[in-house]
Image 1 (cartoon, rainbow, N blue to C red):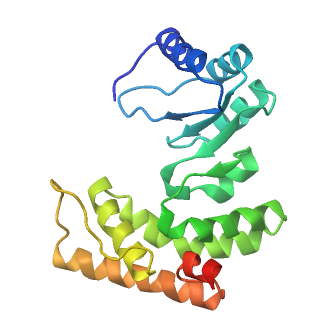
Image 2 (cartoon, rainbow, N blue to C red):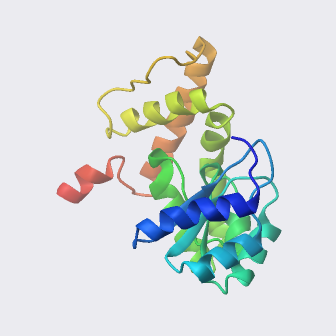
Image 3 (spheres, rainbow, N blue to C red):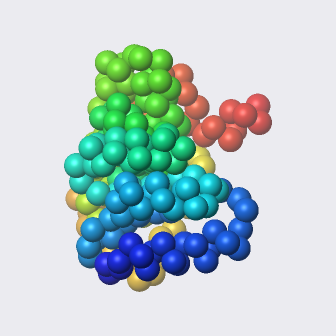
Length: 204
């Protein structure tokens, strides 16, 4: 949550990478300062090839994604944060995937597959249907926790929508809108013949 020089970050991640041999994913989220550069990503991967992925969460990042992919020779996968809000644009820039909330992950997998198949218009239409829920819930991380768990409960994945204290309790109109958006997601799943609860579908 505070800026560090890339030399300090490099030293820190070298300590981590020296201790492991599994692939490392770095989440690069720093609202207090700049995120890491394409050069940092390329040099860390050259020194430690099991640094394989970086998750970016910043605005207007398509150019940075393309630069990172090029600098690392395509050997470091770029993952989009922001709940998958910009997946259509950023897949064309070179991301390998997104890291969304669980409640809409299967829908964004469908968007990803459509984009890989070159069916951008269909991907766009599906993404547009999911986007209101993502955008509304990500206004505030506490609101997101409530909206995400309410949708997981509506899908039969969680038995209860319990958010730990301390939290911001949604106002009544916010709860109503969350319920409305979640109903839209359920209707979308039904229209696509996708299971509301994938776990139950796989066990059937």
